[in-house]
Image (tube, rainbow, N blue to C red; front, side, top):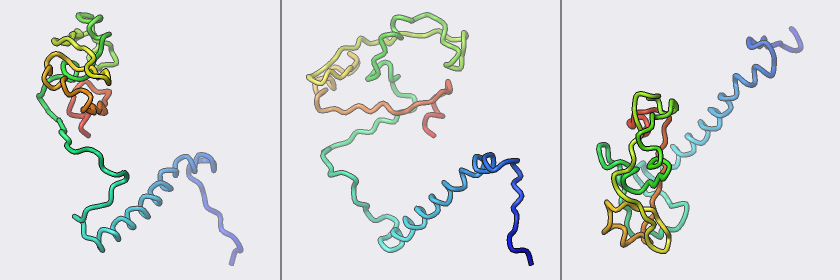
Length: 151
């Protein structure tokens, strides 16, 4: 019986093997975390409230996720360069390269409240409460169609 065994590495070198198998190490860590979470859910119930990471301070949350709603550049996403480049061809990075023209926002933007939050004139009544608002612009995609940003 041999005292040691050899493992043939199909990738050609140990470095290549580690590079190709790195995802496996992450999967091992994930499986341990998932097992721990499943064990906690089994004892407390899957719909049981979980403790928050930070103490809650918000009194109300309005989450606007509107397919077909107003454009972000017409509401809370001030882009002065877009207004300056209005009518120019869309960059190739936008996925439409040359086939579409950039369009300036239809509403005027101004900074509102002490916080200086940029809000369009479309929401003049909402803008009166600018210092009570927290706007999070976190959706991103490099594709020209919006539905992929929801993934």
